[in-house]
Image 1: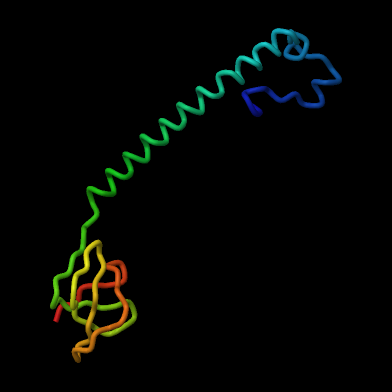
Image 2 (image 1 turned 90 degrees about the vertical axis):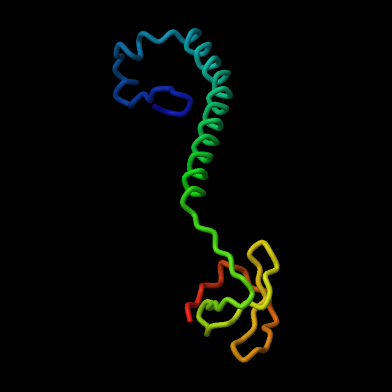
Length: 120
């Protein structure tokens, strides 16, 4: 089946007439192709609705199993590929200011995705 549901005709059928190629009514075939093109927009809308429903179902499944991570000031955390640090301040939306274990404040703000809890 080709684009818009049309059937392919192989070269052997072109040279030697078969029932499928001989029984085609060209005028009726053109009308049917136009009708298929008119219905194409409806099929696209149905596909978009189906896609939105599928995405919603996947999002619901993911959100039911995801665990939120929140740190409080004073908690020890690991930065990715670095030593442990303490949380100095929770800024909200997963953003944290850190300080080293010696007490010096780190200049950048860190997101929760770059931090792991350190159990000391």
